[in-house]
Image 1 (cartoon, rainbow, N blue to C red):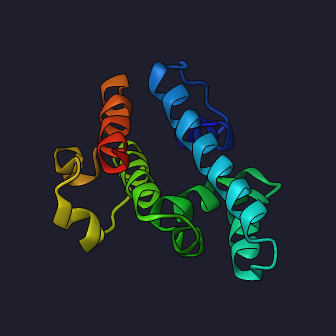
Image 2 (cartoon, rainbow, N blue to C red):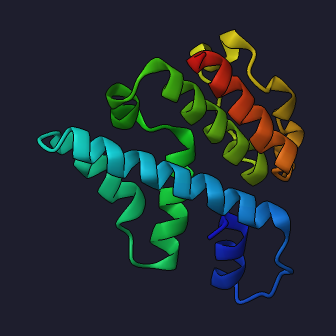
Length: 147
């Protein structure tokens, strides 16, 4: 569920469901699937298991919202368990989530240095909704890294 929708539920407000909410959910499912795969490939990695639980094991709305913010800022154990090309997708997806949720933090140097989607930088904490074009751009970048 998109962070904006969770925040509205916490604040007891109703907001219209929009496409960018579904696209954010898609990215979150992508993160979840990558964590699950990494856990299958690295069953003895307790740090990875703890990171997964921190991001996807919360049971309250406040806990889930807080975990989403942390997920968008970094996934250090997951990044250590996947190849460089998948790290590109993690960085790209993180940046899309940053942009949509107006999280104030620095772009990582390895991400910034390659120039991936720098146009998504959100000035003044303003939300920039994720679009289908952003998702396609992310997939294009990853495919170029794979090929």
